[in-house]
Amino acid sequence: AQTVTQSQPEMSVQEAETVTLSCTYDTSESNYYLFWYKQPPSRQMILVIRQEAYKQQNATENRFSVNFQKAAKSFSLKISDSQLGDTAMYFCAFMRPRDDKIIFGKGTRLHILP
Amino acid sequence: DAGVIQSPRHEVTEMGQEVTLRCKPISGHNSLFWYRQTMMRGLELLIYFNNNVPIDDSGMPEDRFSAKMPNASFSTLKIQPSEPRDSAVYFCASSLTDDQPQHFGDGTRLSIL
Image (cartoon, rainbow over all chains, first blue to last red; front, top):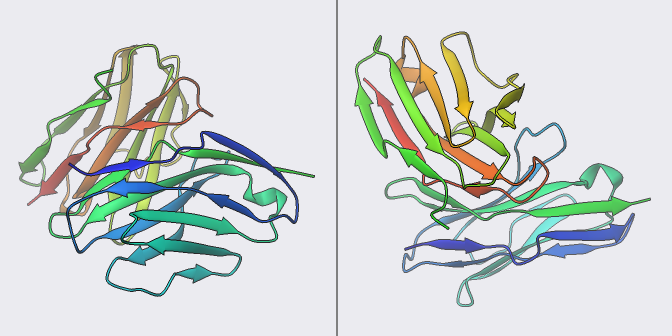
């Protein structure tokens, strides 16, 4: 069975610093997708970044990038030059495309301090 | 810890029919969230409850959708009448409070024909 583990329930960093959120997963699938979602205090989910397992290149979206280590089954999110608006809960998710099964981690609450 | 339990796991029904999705949160959790996942729109929050009280239902797409939490151990999401565009995976999640890590259920895959 697939599992997604976010080992950091809560983190705090100073504004402008770089922060890395960890995510590990377990699967026997070779083809899958990985996602990071951001949930700000409004509670709406925002897709931050998406990675296809068959692509070796790490996905990047502006200040957000991932370190995808397929062999280690690790998918960490790096936020550079963190901003106050980055304060949110961040969820890591795994999706199996053959049946769209999706599994979420429990989330990491990130506080950006002024 | 039995986790968040959702039922049914799969639902296939014809448009116009009423659909009821069920969720049992983890015992002791005071917050419950309903989400909808589609490839086009990703994960959307529909509604969430604190202590059985709906706090924010602004994500509920239209009046055809309704959610209830009659007690701390049970919630339903109802669609009446259902339409093909409601086809999605619906997730329920619970947490100790609404800003704590959330435990997701396995989801209900809904197909409206």
